[in-house]
Length: 117
Length: 110
Image (tube, rainbow over all chains, first blue to last red; front, side, top):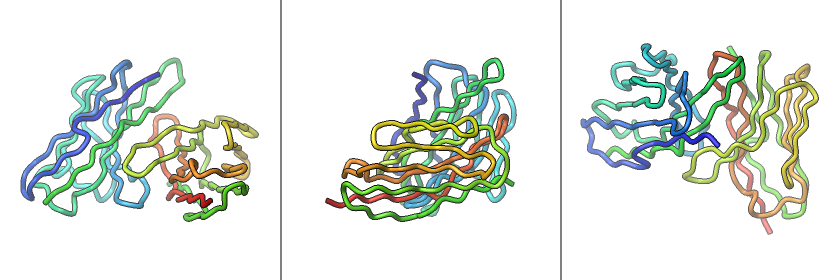
């Protein structure tokens, strides 16, 4: 089956530093990738949608300059949390969507747990 | 705007009992999904429901979809402890993102 990987699986960083999270579709090309954030005991909230080669579309309330998303290829998207603060500590999950002949499938990565100290 | 409501949010069950989780959504959709999430883990896909009247079963879980009522149910039969997890329903539309319900935290007690 289709696999989406994320790296790192967990990261601890100091307040004020930047962290980059990678999301890769290992055995398929993803036309669209999504980034979700999940706080403890809450649901997944969509942060942004990105299409390869295009600028990401951010959900209302998500700071574009803080959460930089790059979707440079059909198999890789990155989320960079810039100048991280403790309130950015969360579980970040990416998802990759592939489309073929009008049929689409979406697969989720294993998540990255970010802790900002 | 597509909204997804799930209930109950918390469910404590005795082993061997049956129960149903409900998922309502606000606008027409192409698909409805059910996911399981264990603590500290990402999502595990359980079911994808595509059409009105669709019913899928896997083990003690059965999901159904009524597109006219915009309602899906996840029925748990003879619950066992291993089913303890958080269950999410999600809805999406072609060329749009997936929207999640709030999740149902299920605890199955012996």
